Image: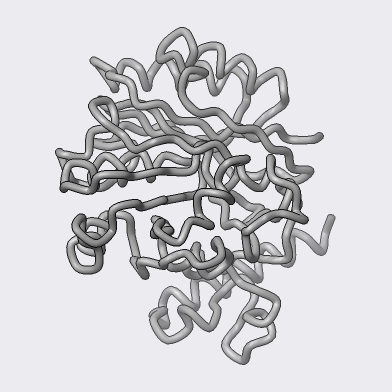
Length: 295
């Protein structure tokens, strides 16, 4: 089976997230999709996978309930099942920033289509900012982009306060995986006095899908939040894998390192895992190996 993967979000008022979640969960179960969807009063955000027909049915439901196709929906495909299970959860925010002034339903930056992105970031007056976390930027980023070196998106506010100045940085272009973080980041920066804020419409994934490799300004691959770990130009599979111990993306060099133990730990987490967790992970990996050997 070829799995169809849909990455989706829309900022739209949802009066009763719990009731919305209940109906959506029933629809997802009825169509046997997997993945994660978050629901909040500010909207819906998630990535799901299933047959093309199943994904279409869930999107039709979300269109009736939240006009999801008026937001952002991107498709890709995988020969392997991208998610182990289905999760549909209610959260205070669909992308956590904890800044009430960041309200995409009120104001956002200027959307820039993927085919126009290269020209924008080539402008010497434009500061290009990667809004993603450090484990994502390690896999790849745009040429010349400023890496905020943050552990989570909630730290982006501190980065802006510490490193950016509306008086000096008059044009800022931001990007993220699928576009949702930039919706909030651009809204936050506009609320704090930045005059011209741009963001890549559809995110890195839409850029990699749209822009030919020979003119791409992207270096490396793009980290994704499913079992593929990362994708390259035209959303092709990559050589990156994921550490089960900490979830960090692992390059081929990481997997050759002395502290890499398949299914257990990697150079990024070996020193922080407790003996108890390490033992549990080794037991789990041993059990999975026995299951694989009997197939």
